[in-house]
Length: 176
Image (cartoon, rainbow, N blue to C red):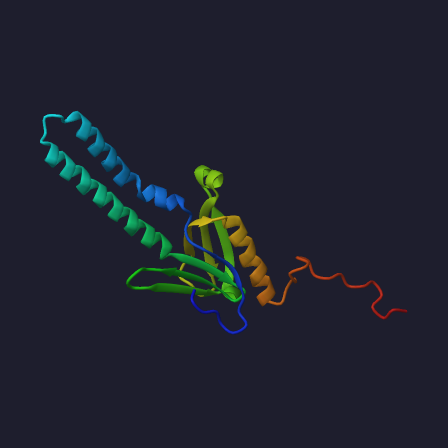
């Protein structure tokens, strides 16, 4: 998010977990391995043709890596004390804003691999929205969920930052 609103404070800002990069690079890595294996096993093929083929596949793999990196960096999840913002897109930009005081539920889902690697899925259900907004492959989803609830309580006038519980009321308020 490029600009914060007046009086707004940044709580968390993140991109999808790096595992999305790894998942997207499986195809070019397999392609590189196939080309390198065929380069060493197809001895009868012309050396210039093998070199041209290998360089072409390496260039394609590097281009794929650049595209995957740019797409990964173009997705941003931002949590402030007033809103949740989900931004995506390189050439055309899509932005979804959820006011923090409209959040009704925040659910996290983590697979076994997600728990081991520290990523998961967060579903934010807001009042008046058509279904939950999904933040997929979010690093530290539990921390994000907890911060959403803390900020939501603050906006609604609930607990303070120092204490998650309201201050106790004295037994004898008159002091007598």
